[in-house]
Image (cartoon, rainbow, N blue to C red; front, side):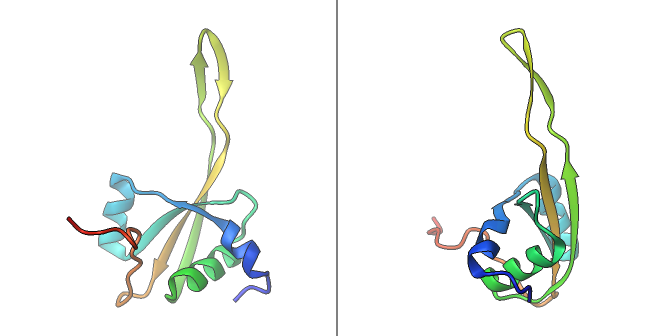
Length: 104
């Protein structure tokens, strides 16, 4: 695990990314997609996932996503750049992203 403090590791993961593509990737290869801090490293992400979800991470792949240019009231603006991570865990383990929610 990384030598960083626990407070830093909790700030690495910002949110899970639940989209059609991330669901498809998760079902086929036991990967999960997270939005992470832009300055985080693969080692930071691996440490944070293992600490928070108590799973064994096999690999981490990161993608820097460029912000879109959007028009708002006839002015051009730009959304922020962000980073996402594809995290592969062992085949017999699961990350419950809906933890704490009641099933209807």
